[in-house]
Structure formats: C-alpha cells, structure tokens
Length: 124
Length: 205
Image (cartoon, rainbow over all chains, first blue to last red; front, side, top):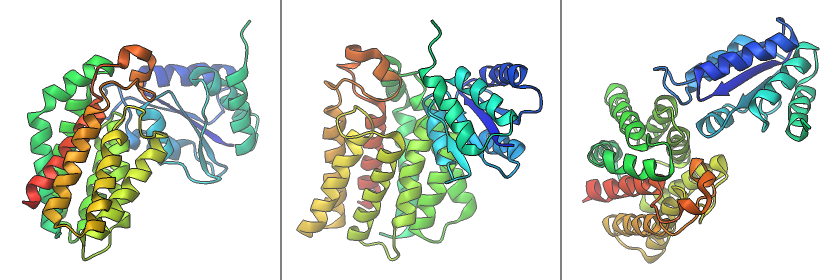
C-alpha cells in the first residue's frame, strides 16, 4: 500500500488528523503523523517527517500532506520522483481522501489524485 | 576565498543574528509569527557547533554542513529556505574558490530558494535581499573589482533590497494573509539576509 504522512506545525493536529483519517479509512491504512518540532514546539522537524516516511513506506510510494509554511517547504525537500510526492491539498480533507485511497490499495498516482480532488470538494 | 573565511562567515552571522535577534523578532511580530530571531539564532548556534565538530576541509563542505544543519534544526520556514540556499551553494562551489566561482554558486543558491519557496522579486521575502546581492556579485565579477569591494557591494545591495520591502505587500507566507496590512513593515527574512551579507563583507576585511 501507498503510505500517507501528515505533516503539521502542531503535533496534536497531526496526531488527531491521523486518528480521524484512520477512523474513516480503516486501521490498516498506512498513515503516519509528523507534527511539531523536535522540542515539541510549533513548527516542522525534518527528522520527524523522515521517520514517519520510513514507518509507512512499503515500497509503493509515499504521499506527504503538509499544512502550510515550513511544513510545505520541509516536505518539498524530501520529494523524490515517483516515490515521495507532496500533495497540494486541504490538510484534513486531503488526509482522509488519501488514507481511504491508500487503504483500498490504490497506486501512488491514484492516491495523489484522490487527495487533490478534495481541493474542489464542496460541502454545501 | 579559503575554507576559514567561510567558517568565519557563519560565526560572524551567528554573532550578528544574536545581537539583532530581538529586532528580527519584532519585525516578524509585525507581520509574521514572531519566531524568526529566535529560530535563526538557534539554527546558527547549531551551525557553529556542527562546523567546530566536523572540521570541514573545503568551503563547499562548510556550506553544505551549514545548509543541512539549518534544514534539520530551525523548525520554522527559514530553516528549509536558508538551508536550501547554502546546500545548493555548496553543491555548486568549485575549489579553489574564486570570486567568479563564488558568484556563480551564490546565484545557484538564490535560484534554489526561489524554486523551493516559489518566490520572486517583489513578493516581500528574503529573495528581495538575496537576488540584488547576487546581481551585485555578478556585476563585480564583470567589472573585475577586488573580493572585498565585491562583498561590500553585495552587502549594500542586500540592505537596499531589504529596505525596498517596506512598501511592498507580502505575497508569500503568513504575512500574505494580512493583505494591505503587510505594507509598511520590513520583511524579516530580507532583514536577516542582510545580516548574512554584512557578515561576509566583515570577515573578508
């Protein structure tokens, strides 16, 4: 399965978004959270993001879903063609869409597409 | 331009950033999230430690060590941004380091941060100080001036570039959410870029 990593400025937000995504996608979806700095402040730790990538990487690719600012910049530094890609999507909606697609066994391109569809998803 | 000069560059920048930490944080408090001074101070302290521990053998190694350390240790947006500048500069720098070689590597570093942040001149970011500094270096190489004169000109161009961010409306980062309210404040990233350039001119003298 494709891995999904949620990169947020906040450790709490990343962990709760992961819990929500797993709640909807099912517990087997390979989703990991990478939130906050290494001293538990608000910000991004590339070490945490790399560890999260390793934890969900099953060899079929990993989609990184950052919230904003340093999370986006850090995620982009880890991009590897056809292997680690950054999704430019709303954090929560994108996380859920990607987790559901990944849990269903979709390919890297399909998981990315599912996440990107959440950008145009209307609630009303 | 030898290896020691590049180590001294980061030591002097670390000293300047510590001295100016509160001013950077005040600038960032006006339009950002008030962490730029503290984050950069912490990152550069780590850079100095890493350089002391690793005893780099070339200028390129100094730059890549500094870049990687900033990426790993800053936590805010300035980490990946400055980290990319120096990592790319280190990759592009040839030994022995001439002014022309440094100028070309510097430009490669600026292009890397423009790409990563998708920022251009006029967006009210560090690019508004770094790109004019890069252009000043290229012109200095063309005119055949001394290393010291070239670095002085680059520092002046960075300072003018940072000052020019005051009337700009931010188009990147947290400040962009403020719209017109971002006008009238110097960009903190441009202000810290001036400190890097000033430090380089100082240690070359």
